[in-house]
Each structure stands twice: as structure tokens, then as C-alpha cells.
Image (cartoon, rainbow, N blue to C red; front, top):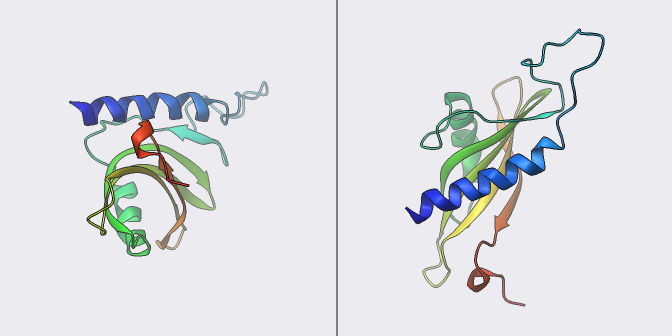
Length: 135
């Protein structure tokens, strides 16, 4: 129950953040509102239980670069159409180090047009005060 609540809170936050990144429909009427905009992030519209096939494929190809623990994708938060596709995926991370706590991480993956995929960036989410990084 706690896991679902955290996922929904993160999705809600990402929705508000990413809504600012979407462009408005141009007045010329060239682009229907439902078409993805090149370079604009589009909020994912699927069940949080599984990733769409294309996002899962990109994650599977790129996950070898994630070496600090076991990354379990929880939800695709958004996609960005570029010369390929960028994916923002929420992952639950179980660190290899048994002394470290489990954490949530946003994983950004770029999948090119040739079918290759790579990790572009990761951002750890600190949901509770006790899980803040120690300085």
C-alpha cells in the first residue's frame, strides 16, 4: 500500500513539473493536440504496474550501466520524442551494499533510432527525512 502511495505522489509531482515542458498547440492548426511534439515531454498514460514494451526494451538494453544495485522499474513517467526517444522511468533500487537503504530513483534513458539505448542520467528521490544523504 505504501509503495503505491509513493508511486502516485511521485507521478503527481512529475506531472506538474513536466506540464510546464509541453508546448501549446500552434494556432496554425498544423499539429493535432494528440500528436507528440518533437522535444516536448509527454506524460505517460498507462497502468503503473508495467512498462510499455518499447520502454521496457530500452530499459533492458541500458540497465547494464546501472551498477550500484538492483533497479526495478516501477512506472514510466514520461517520454520525449527526439532523434529517438527519451524515457523517464521511476525505479526502486535495492543497493548491492547491505548496509544501504532501499531508494527510489528517476532513470533517464535515451533510445536511438538504431535500437541502441543508454542511461543519460539518474536522480535519487529523497522521500523521507531519514533517507536524506549524509554530509
